[in-house]
Length: 500
Image (cartoon, rainbow, N blue to C red; front, side, top):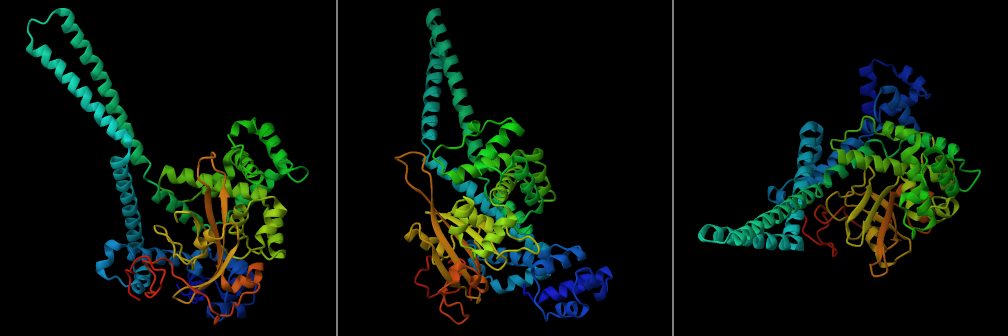
């Protein structure tokens, strides 16, 4: 949705509420003439002022700035790229009309598509288990063996009339024992298929939590306040954070940190984060996390449990990296991730994730998206921006820096990326290595990427030395191959299913 609609939305809502321009302007501490320019789409608006206007009008910010509509539009464009719909020749440009005129139908289509993807994953997972899992072959062989023994013993009992009693008793015992074994194998098979089916429902809960975070702007004031209270109760600041958290868990919750099953091979910053999350889960009986979840549209228990874990990690991050100090340090260091990690004793990933949460009205940081992928290209974490589509069900464009980082492990890869629609972003990516469980196991490499609008690049150390002019060269990218209209791209992995 065009940003020029913001003023019209503010005007329409104000009139619907019966407010005058003078009244609303006074409430948000601006002049009536300035509000008139905003409503006439002659002045851009964002940040704290947009938040104050939204609050006075009883709206969520994404209802004014169109973030919800843009997210729906992105989902519809991705839906149009599904191979099963290719022969319909859907025009992605008409998705905006559908979202605007028939919003409920658009949401219904997106929900059906997510359900379809979920079912396909279930079928594929079960197919893999049926064709590859050795348990099934062993179980079927055992079933056939036991059935054969039972059948042979029963035929002897039925056909031999003068069978001595001791031999008859022995065959009856064999039938009983094999019947019990047969029942055990049958129960094991039933449990196997139950586990297989239960383990495949992963798409919908993840997407439910994604949408929940997006609806809240990935910022939770109640958790930020709780982090300050937890730090005070634990005495963090007057002593080392790790010692303070261990003492707090013993004193306030009667929890021995040794019982938390924190792996011994974790680096110090990861151990501190695990302790902070354990404290966050228990703080004030879980009330802050419950309040942050209030009103969330999470349809399944799996999604609710996932959201609780995500919010506990958010609270832990706010404890380790307190908002006011971290925001000030981020601005003064021009978002130097290594500097922030060193100053706060945090990991690269922890700092990146915290940077995406700096949305406090009046003290906002740069709006960053975050993407994390493994060496197979599987997306393990995604926090998109309103105008940056991060694919849900497929790999991103192979030209994105998040993949290029694997070619230079440990080095920061920066990239000015230009999308077909003219949007330009600064991509920053680096690989991190997670501890491997044992020596023979392969290295666990992940790539983490931050992205922001290129307009903010000069506020970061990573924009230094780059030509950030709108006419400067940039890497031509798309969202992914199926949706990208750059037909001549040498890196294309599959044909586009949407015409330009």
